[in-house]
Length: 412
Image (spheres, rainbow, N blue to C red):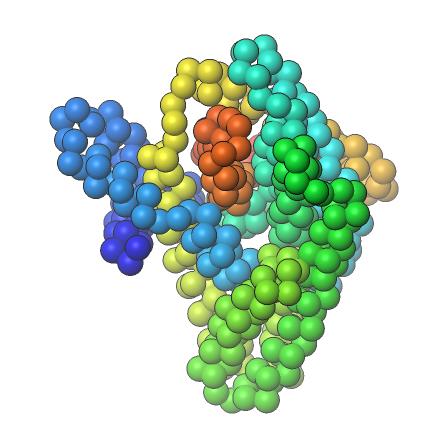
C-alpha cells in the first residue's frame, strides 16, 4: 500500500511539473489528462510491455480508491475547501443552496435513474430500475473537490461562485445519504429488512446529525486554537486532530462525516480570519491548508486517471456511458432550473445563471468512489462503474476546460 501510494505521489509531482512547464492547464485537469493518457498508453501497448501493464494494474489494485478517498482524503479536502468560504456571503445564498442540495439532488437522481433504465433497456442490458436509481444517486452530487479546484480558474461572479461552492460543499453529504437510502432499498428487495422508517432515520441521523456535530466540533476546536494562537504549530496540530479524529468519531456515531467537515471548516475558517486571532497563526494555518489541499488534489486526480485499470470494457458499456453523459446534463439542467425558478432573481437573464450552474456542475472522485464501493455481488456493477467513470472523465476534462470560456461568453 505504501509503495503504491508513494508511486502515485511521485507521478503527481512529475505530472505537475510537466503541466506547469508546458501544458499550462488548470492543475487538476492537467494532472488527470496526463494520468489518463499514461494509463491508456500502457493499456494500448500491453502486448509489447506486459510487465509494465501488470505493474501499474497491481499498483491500482493495491490502492483501495474508495477507502483512500472517502475514509482518508475527503475529510482534509472538504475542511480545506470550506475554510476559504466567507460564511456571511454564503448566507445570502442560503435558499438557493438548500434547494440545490435537497430538491435538486432528488430530481437529478430520479431523472438520471429513469433515463438510464430506458437506455439500458434499449441496449438489451437489462439493468434493474433500482440499480439505475443507485447510479442516479451516486452521479447526481457535484464534487466539491473538482468544482472548487476549477472555480479558482473560471473567474465567475461572486454570487454565482458562492452558489456553486455552497452547493458542491453540502450536496455530496446529502448525495451520500440518498445513495445509502437507495442502496438500503435494493437490499430490501433482495430479502433483507429495510423500510421507510430506516430511510428517514438515515437522513435525520446522518444529515442533521452531521451538521450539528460539525458545529460542536468547530466550536470546541476554535476555543482550543484561540487559547494557543501564539504558537502556530500547535494551532495546525489541533486542526489536524479535529479533521482526523473528528471524521473518525463521525463514523463511530454514524453521522455524516463530510457534512461535519464542511461545517467545521466554515466555522474555523471564518473565526481565524478575524482581528481576534493572531496574524501569524492565521497566516500559517491558511498556508498549511492551502498546500495540503493542492497536494491532495494532485494525488486524487492522478488516481482518478489511473482508475481506468480497474474498468471492465464492453461495447454496450461504452454506448451507455456516452448516452449517460447527455442524460446527466439533462438531469442537471432540470435539477437546477426547476428549483431556481422558485427564487426571486436580480439578474436580467436567469437562464445564463442556470446554464453556468448546469455546465459547472462537475462530477469527480466521490462518484467514482461510491460506484467502486458497491459490493461485487450487485448486478451490473461493472457497467455502473464504467458509465460513472465515463461521465466523470467528460465532466472534469470537457466541462472543466470550457467553463471559463462559457462564463466569458455569457458575460458572467
